[in-house]
Length: 366
Image (cartoon, rainbow, N blue to C red; front, side):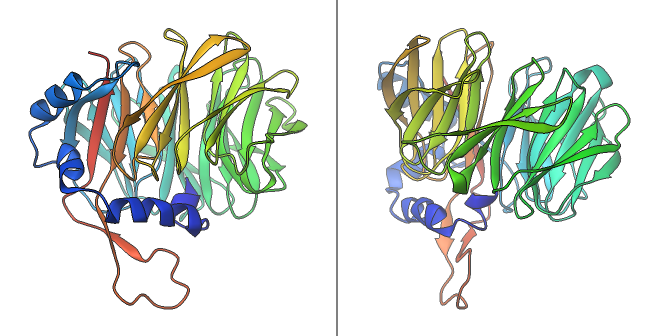
């Protein structure tokens, strides 16, 4: 999300601090130069109540910022938004199988499989790039408002909704034609969106500590619901069967009824959350916490009862994630950061990524 790299510096400062104080042993577990098998064996021996532990660490070339991770179940491919390009990894083999380049400052990848199309938000170019899912070749683009960040594909209306940070808006694109068909004023900076498969889009509005519900056909906001006692929501996931939203807030996961907007429960999570996911097969909800360097695992005991299973150690900066709902593996990425000596006044990002340290972490219960 944008806040991790630009506008919300206090949040990212926590993540940077975490990097600066990582122990040598903790970094070695995720260092691309470290034997991933040994790391996986060591972590497996120490696996906690959830069973999740590090299986593998895979080096990824490049030293540009990263953002969303998106997993394609049908091909076992992970799409990593990596600055100016999308890195595509086959998670079975650990091999990079594609790069979708020529972009400016990208954030999110979504799929419309029935049209064999993928879409990439580019906040720097003010575009939604369109690519062929089979060939991974760019085939077009649609204009968006500046700072396009999160996105979601709605299979009911067959539309892609981009969520644009600075303009506080959503651009709506017909997935089949690639044409812009609508624009929505959100009234605040948007974060992660989700679709419920019934014609509704939900999105966290971070500075207002709200979730908005959007009708995907009329492109109108239906409701605004506070996430209190949660604050500054970022990650958002959904239990489609029970219609429960999982909103990652500062130090707190908020569970909300997606039909009524009622907060059902809250559970504590780590610091610096940027993504949440829900696995319907296991009943686990996840929060990836880049500040505290852990993965909070919460179990949905029933639609009204939840409990924290454990906080699985990951690495500082591992703040976004994707989930394989078949193998139940969780994917995260991070890198080593160092502060820039004597940054200019008001520098928003006084750090740099150490070349050669960006890597993919695969956690599982294997």
